[in-house]
Image (cartoon, rainbow, N blue to C red; front, side):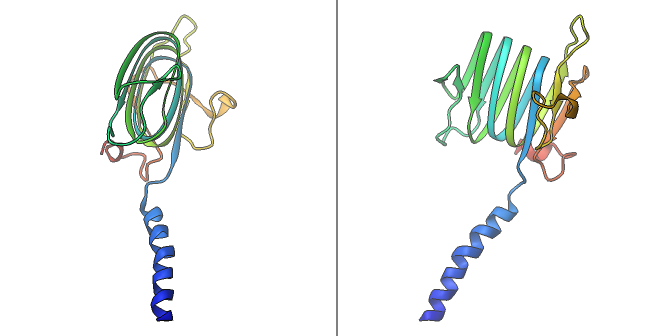
Length: 169
């Protein structure tokens, strides 16, 4: 009997560890001072701010507990906002966030793909981005790259960053 109890207790420890080992690694995306269009399709959490422009938040896992929040107010599973000085977040599950405008700041944790298209202003500045877990474009801009002026796809937290289809599920 004690052998059965020992075997069951080992399964309780080993199975969750094996499950965690098969999950995709966590990653991060950081965007600061962006100007142009940013679309993030991911799984995990995302916090963002927009100086001026539009934001569309789409919760792709409607059966979970997480809902998009704009300026601190919980919204529908699909939310569109046009305005200035907006903050938004999705704290879990699958999502798609489309932002067009200026003053774009995004911090995403989890896995996903971002499509970036910078629009240069008078100074030529398009903002900064990094898809590195340790990068922080606000605190350490020297670790980041300028947002490209040609449409560019960037993976974050993917086992193979050159395979963005893995995030599209």
